[in-house]
Image: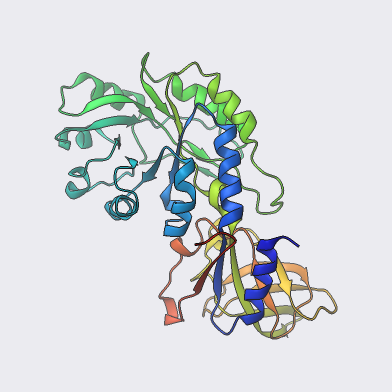
Length: 354
């Protein structure tokens, strides 16, 4: 048993009626080190929106060239933790106060946004039609995000106080290394010689098979082959998803119209990921064992959408602890915390937290 799993089991044994998040910082450190080695020569910025927990950010900071933020709140949060660290400021709806900040790079979303900037270095966010190239993606970033090539041309043609340093695009999420490399090649085609190119994030995370990891080595080699001096990526979920666990306790097991349900403490107000992505969250059970049956795992909320996993095989009894894996990204921070006013979860940091 690894140190992280041993500590997880110890926390599970002490769990009361309040759920808990557990972050394995040593595992995160090792994972980040592997990503950094595989992407040598590529600028690496962590997308803070995936998980802004200070302990997570401190663990990642030695391995990243900067952080990508998408709001004034994220900008202030990261700036307070790491004064002077390079920040890239993105997002489609920047306010006047956002545009008054001074990040290392702004990702400009429209000609109007460029006009409003009084100074600074910017990348023009490009929105490309990529239906074929993004087939099978978990999420395609079309619609209002960024500018079509005609709008980019408008920005390049008009005088402005900000300095255009290159282009940025985040076109899809949930793709493998070959598909993302193909998108990167498309993005490079919209940059001028000598300009920076940021190709965003979108590295696939497989919740059905956690051992099926993104091929960082192949992606790093593909990006280095683009022939650009400065190429930047902004991974989020693929960096931190694997380091987090969400621990809950089984309150009740009952059969309704022939279907077996296990009611757990907590719910999607703490872990919204399985609902938003429409998957069964992988889990481990700490309990007495027993007969495995097909069961649906639900939370405490007054909505039929409060589901962690549907009709999965498990042996569960009241008092058992269910530890949901892959809860280190887009989990607690995107959840509707105050619905029904249940207690906030506890947070534990193991295997390397000072």
